[in-house]
Image (cartoon, rainbow, N blue to C red):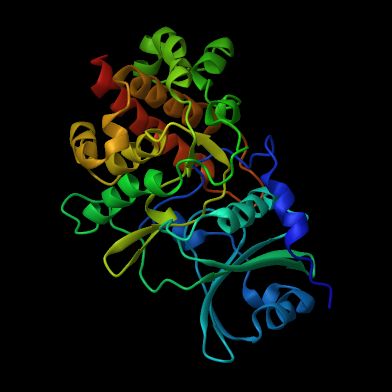
Length: 341
């Protein structure tokens, strides 16, 4: 059978080939999880399914589909015929999201052993599919709600990640400011379009557009960034949090990953003030310039607000509603940091 392996996928590490912008999924408690659009294992071409035997040495005996998030790709917890548990994920090679999955395979292959992630066992192409096999993690996604016993582990993960991926194991990873510049100027775009906005955004539109790019000056660094940490992009194992779905290739200042998580904490029920207080034990957050964080909060919210108005990507019907919700959450964070009313 035709199994294409490392060479083609490793080419995805070249700079300037980013996947879709971050922010494409929701925590597992959301209703959207129950309507995720994913193929089942049995729907893959026979050549793709049979390739598991050639690569892993045993066929899939049982598969349990995983329905979290908005991703259109395959995601199954599988038991091989020899009893080994594995997590299989993948995407058709002609799908619009192929580059994101290929980047994930290449990034995971480059991560040092000490990075707190499930281990990539292998990645390959067969039967018109890119497939990845990871070690199976038995735990579920962390609960980010107030009072959750998982919060300490999540914050420890945020604190530990920069220690394991600085300097970046992929030295030529593009700078995060360069990759995100295409989408992180939403307020300026909305102003140019004379878009209809909520009262708060309309009142402060000029100021939002003025500050949304300022974070770039403080974003440089050699830390490999995840840029998509949310509850559904982490798993718990033995009381520790692991990062999963490392599907983007960026490097920059380590405070950026904590800044991506703050709105998710607010979404989980924390006030903006409390969400920031929780970050006090994360060294990279404490080193962030306050003005840069405020600018980044504005940039995220502007990205979500503008993106929520676009047509839904193929196979991802729930994304725009999520982005509209996150835009509203982003506004509360900006208001907290600026005092704008």
